[in-house]
Length: 407
Ligand SMILES: [Zn+2]
Image 1 (cartoon, helix red, strand yellow):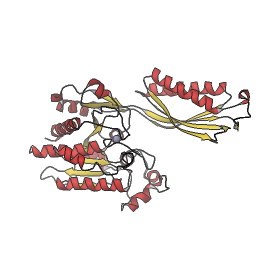
Image 2: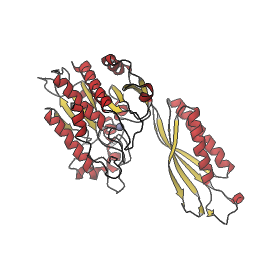
Image 3: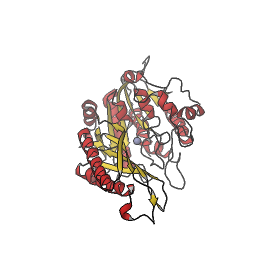
């Protein structure tokens, strides 16, 4: 059993729902606190100093012998420990477990770092509980204001501030972490792949090129509520029709742009089984390889939706809720990573369609990502999977990267 295997086995039952087999490791829940204790334990047994920063992110430090003062220019690797509702085991924890396993590989080989190493676990990456993703990393870079974060509420009405206080944390100094740029020389995040690109080319690992720009738009179709039985078809102003046609159009537009578009959330008013709806509110999630394509895609989907609405005498209002620009991972750390992994043969360079802490940190420090093959491509589901062999190759690769930077 490798150190990866035993570390992996040690958290498999934390936060797993016995009925769905999915993980419910929400920020500041009991499962999250258990994983945070597990992280501290892993650090302690490796004589690494643990620090929970002002934003709840965990850092375990392996300092070069004789180093005094604060860390500078560190090689930092890790990911997150929280999950989506009924998520898989790999999204997040794979990066943290692999990071500790990589430390073990260096120690077993007697390698002593000349540069500080840290294993990091960023707080509330998925945003499953409070509705905003990458809270820990966004607070540290200043992309998310502390006042806004603290006021976020979960479905029970509990604010992030209350949840943190209940977990024994202080929220007083939450916000921009100016030490980030001094301390972090490079951040390398290993993550399970959330698609099937590696399976299709039969390779265990990839490095990231970009994170696709993405966004969320609200479409409101306004018609007229009426009786589902007594209203003649020609007299209806049924917004459901324009919405349904728009869903199909979005799919076609996405195909034409080699992009993705999803209407995943819908609110129907009045939502009666025997009533023609008066209003449909629907949220479009759209992602594309570059910002120009994303703009064209959303314009295309919107103009089709307007045509469908006009044909049915429906009013349509479209507003952008959030748009996240493209993240282009810098060349230097990627090339260095590829060089360190040259012995593994060709390492594909892939864009990712999902958001990550590495994408947030990229605004301030050099970052790179490594993906581990997911043979089914399924993610954010209990079915998410990676072979143990591939995970071990991932941990080994992370160790090679560490050596490249710190030795
Ligand atoms: Zn993740």
